[in-house]
Image (cartoon, rainbow over the protein chains, first blue to last red):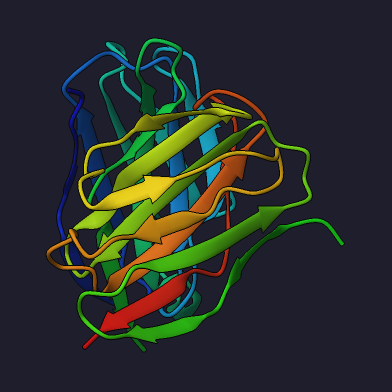
Length: 112
Length: 113
């Protein structure tokens, strides 16, 4: 079955440094989604990428979808303490694309 | 106020007992999901449902059962056959297939002693 892999598993940065997490799927994806889970909270949707090579920005966050639609990345510029949390990528699979598979996530901690 | 509700937030059970976790949504979503979260394991899919009276096994369905008798409800039963039931359980819903945003409940932390 489909596998979604994320690296790194953990990342600790000083406030102001940049951060990147990478996501790779074993199969081509129709789209990829990114979620953020704050400590003690539940995952919250950030964005969805659909097109090959797509790049989207949300303030300091930049999301990319690979040309082959099998990999994606999330880059945060100048991290802040509010960026702390686990970032997950997720991709649909199954015959009707209803099965939503998540990566293991990257836990980001920020030292003020 | 629309949303997805899981109850209770914390649940304790004795080993060997079945326990049912509640998940209710008033978002009029067709698709609903159950995930299990363990430290370092991310979110692992237990069961998902595309529509009422239909559900599919996810990646770790053994020891779990679900029902989808109503559109707004998708309860998960953790049976005594589940070897390591202690975990954080998350329910989610979405309008349609996995190409639409999933909304998560607050989660239920189950501890089996």
